[in-house]
Length: 316
Ligand SMILES: Cc1cc2nc3c(=O)[nH]c(=O)nc-3n(C[C@H](O)[C@H](O)[C@H](O)COP(=O)(O)OP(=O)(O)OC[C@H]3O[C@@H](n4cnc5c(N)ncnc54)[C@H](O)[C@@H]3O)c2cc1C
Image 1 (cartoon, protein in one colour):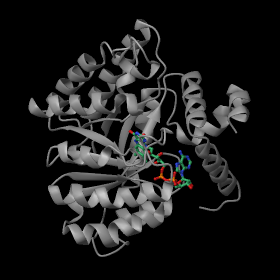
Image 2 (image 1 turned 30 degrees about the horizontal axis):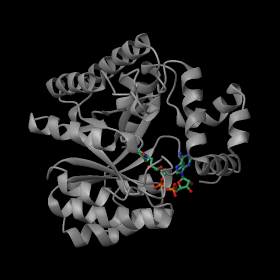
Image 3 (image 1 turned 120 degrees about the vertical axis):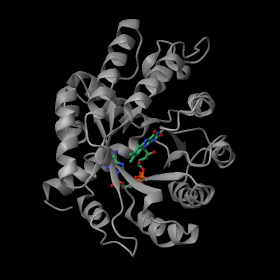
Image 4 (image 1 turned 30 degrees about the vertical axis):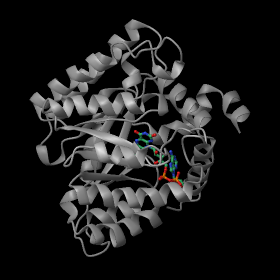
């Protein structure tokens, strides 16, 4: 599969990527945010620009994020998009590149965004990258929370074995996105069985809800969503103001999304659904990003192909 992905020409990757990428400018991405709002869906915006090697790229990414925060602030509070950001986007020394890399600049950039977002009442989420970043990101979150940055949320990956302990250090009342994790991690530090990752998602969601956190339950697995709503939420004794469901823009889950937002699933009434809306400033960046993700996680290629097939056959 990885040979196949590597050989894919850019224009073909664009065909695969198009349903999942909300355009090649901030303006196009905002139009998507507005169209999602018409379907009662919330958004979190993300710029696709990774694998950064030069300072002028860092400066360009920072500039777009500053514009994003400003643009989000202009929307009404009840459906204002949040902003998702990746620490490796603000440094030429990304930690996953190994020895001598110190993420120089990332902390300062995120602290600046945090200040700007706080002043404009925009929520931020620091995405979780691979295991090189886990400790770095959690420490930064603790620093931001200690300084009153309660608008900044975290992401925890259930595949990592350390996550069970990391739950303890998450501040009560913090906003936490729970995911299985996109990065293939070594068996020494993570589990590889997806079913087990999802069992952990349910367990950890309950722990976080009970300790007072706002849980962003991010999965496309409908069986796991049902178990979350029917088992975890009643067990934690919380109402729908304490969590939301999250999915990626473009993954075909319109049926369950509408059932959730219209309150037709279970007895909880309407449940918020937020889509992760990635966009690029140039299609070449979007296709490079998609290729890297397919290489990191070839199972995703299978999922994308399956979804494309279902879409072509007109099935949801
Ligand atoms: C809002 C959001 C934010 C995320 N943020 C992070 C993060 O910060 N760090 C991180 O490591 N991971 C992140 N992820 C990715 C996450 O870790 C999983 O890799 C991803 O959600 C797939 O897992 P799943 O629970 O949907 O289950 P899976 O078993 O992987 O997927 C269930 C089904 O969903 C469909 N599907 C899932 N993903 C895709 C896709 N990309 N394209 C097409 N179809 C798909 C397929 O039909 C698949 O069979 C995020 C995911 C979401 C939804």
